[in-house]
Length: 519
Image (cartoon, rainbow, N blue to C red; front, side, top):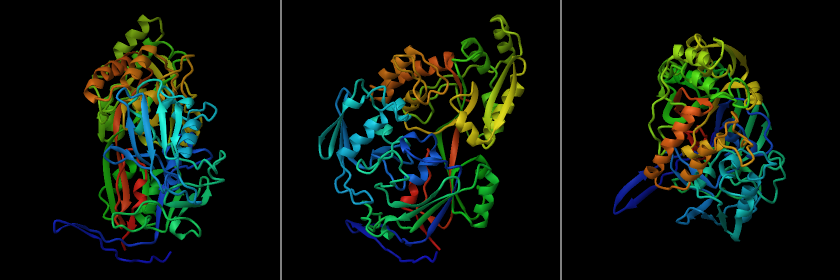
């Protein structure tokens, strides 16, 4: 596409001092390589970030967690919590229009939150918010104000509203399939959607009848700056992405992995931004299936994990070691506790004392598209040999995602969340009837843990909350269902011609809203 370039100069003066002068070239196409995008119907049921990335430029969120892990209002103008954290007042920005001209208002907020809390929808947001909020607690106050009346205190409401499944649907047009009616508040509209092949997004500025996007850029000019964004599904193999980037066929590698970083970190045409995160690989055991229903076996497995070795070998040391609880050092209120020591011979003795014949045979399921996950499994197989005979069941990433909640023993990628309490609620609690929340892939239920988590969600001060986080982390380490060998650094990679490029701890492609191309 021929790119129309215009130089826009914006100078802001304060007390005679120039704050910035920004030159922006408008127009052009940014090409992004993604992994398998799969079939999208209801964004509330996204199960991985790749689904959300192209669509977040079409449908937006009530809040936004930025590259510094700070959560701010987005479609909301503001929020306010009562002192006891039981009542949250959400105030919508006025004047925001969906791409079909409908105005965003409180009806859309109520419609979406109630849908997320409906068990029939099957959204992971139920695990995030369902512990503290029920549908009848979502109340419209006036045309632009919604009140959330919580059944238990929670600090995480603003962050939960940016969970990647929480894209806001137009309550007047959405009937269960977003592709059939892709009406959002974002700067782009969906022009083409070919599952497993490509997604084409067009600037709202180029679509007849579409109202202007509600936000301007730093230069005061309408967003977006580019005319088009194309996502190409290039499969799971990093080599294809790297070759396309080096040839100039693509501009951005979304969800960049270690292989991309190692290949492109010194490339002259690449911007590589690294970010420490709460992203990790969760080695999880289903506690409703033998032998993982016995905590003695789970403990023995944890004793067979050399976390430093896994970080150094599988991820080239680009992260920090974990301690088998799902709270990262980047989270507020993180409590530093030691992992269970590496002791395979001790694990063997523990199993034999419990009546097990060693080595105990187990099978671990892994997706071959994640190189560090395959390496973790291979290291475990070698190091655990005195206590466990580990066989590795490999499969394509797409197959693993079809089975990720069902395999007895597997390694699942988990992305970053701004608060530790968020991921604990997503993946490690059950309801009063002992039913696991949708993303509790290990089926682990511990009511002391759940009680402490609910209490922690009601403490706003991170230092005070840390006292409970120490207890939560210790419980999960000692009798939980997971091994977390390390926390990963992540990278954002773009061609040097892409301007205003930013990384994000969850590898969300939010920068596309305000990026431009410099030729």
